[in-house]
Image 1 (cartoon, one colour):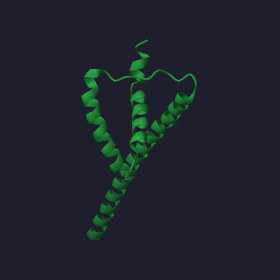
Image 2 (spheres, rainbow, N blue to C red):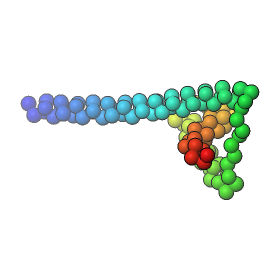
Image 3 (spheres, helix red, strand yellow):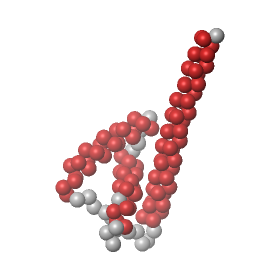
Image 4 (spheres, rainbow, N blue to C red):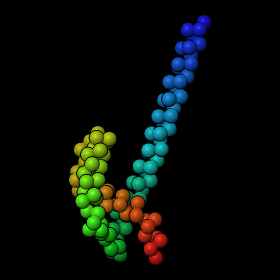
Length: 109
C-alpha cells in the first residue's frame, strides 16, 4: 500500500516538473515570436524609401560588443541545433539591438 502511494507521489512530482518545463518553453517561444514580429516589421521598414538612419555602437563598447555577439552566435546555433548564416545573424542581431534600445531612445527626446 505504501509503495503505491509513494509511486503516485513520485508520478505527481514528475508531472508537475514536466508542466513547469513546458510552461518555461512556452514563455521562451512567446518571447521569440515577439522578437520575430519586431524583426519582420523592422525589415519591412528598412525596405521602405523612408528608411531610418542607422544606429552606431559607441567606440568604448566595441570590444565588449564583439565578445558578446561571438558568444551569442555560438549559443544560438547550439540552442537551435542548426547552422545559421552569419549575414542572417548580423541582421537579426542589429534588429535585436534596436529592439532593446527602444526604451532608451524614447527618453532621449
